[in-house]
Length: 168
Ligand code: ADP
Image (cartoon, rainbow, N blue to C red):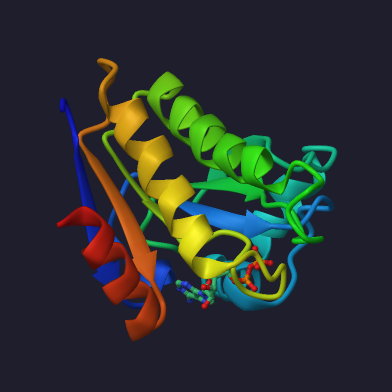
């Protein structure tokens, strides 16, 4: 592998990386959970830039500056809402990881941190989401790019343990 996948437990808004990924909604205007935390920490300039982006479709990704965050950029991606798994949810979640990583690489970024996309209010089952995330990141890291460090930033201990067991 060219780059490395690491697992951390903590608040993604505190990380000093080239980009943190936001589990946003299609409006990109902010919301609850990690989206709310990122907007609060970044300040109002972030919402102002988001207003210029025309929203974001599920599975796609858009990049902004990080403003008051330590992270230089925010990559906003919209995870699928879980409706039982038969509506393309796994493929859309994989696309979130792939498109976010591709956007980071396109911008020459070297480090990126993801939250556990869709596993909060969007109710994607955590085990399946973690398998998709790890698979997508590992596959991406097989291809040459500037990305050297990919972090999964888990908020809960349960998520951290889930990812650690997948990586060992
Ligand atoms: P979604 O709408 O995609 O489900 P949520 O924000 O509800 O997004 O939850 C996604 C994940 O982000 C959950 O695992 C939640 O625990 C986690 N989370 C919430 N706040 C933070 C934070 N400050 N840093 C990292 N992860 C967070």
